[in-house]
Image (cartoon, rainbow, N blue to C red; front, side, top):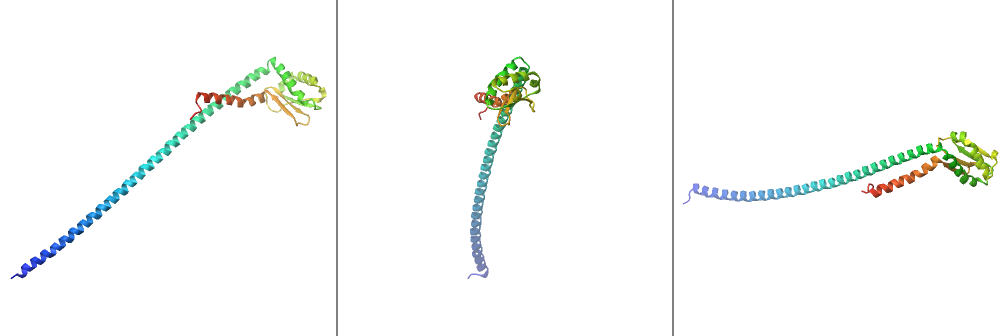
Length: 213
């Protein structure tokens, strides 16, 4: 006959066995869930890491391109500044040469050539206005009047006027009502050639490869 104590031991073993099974089952489920969560977290971390790396690479490329672009712009700006500096130096030299030329005996010949070319364009006009600088007003009035008379202008129809702006030399001719103008000042000729000087420098720099990139 089984005693109560033995029955309790059997019942206890059954209960403990059942609890042990439940515990093992629950433990495995918890481990499985934890493993899944850990793997999911690892995947998210890896994806985040990859996004961060890609983002850094992308930003690095953008920054690199920006620096290269800025460096190229700085290079071109320096070249253009240097080109402009060269142009100004050349133009300044031309003005100094022109100043010396206007003080030389050859300047009268230049005025004669200019008047010979310009005044015939005003042959149909009754009178002309010739603008010259103060130095030429003192030194070359008779020459200008003489050349105008050769074209057919009466002396009283030749107005010799002092030009308002500072010029090195040469002259500007207008008809009487100021609707027709021919600017043959040396200053105008130099300034008109400023573009040609710049173009020549551009071609020289391009040929040397300084404008590439």
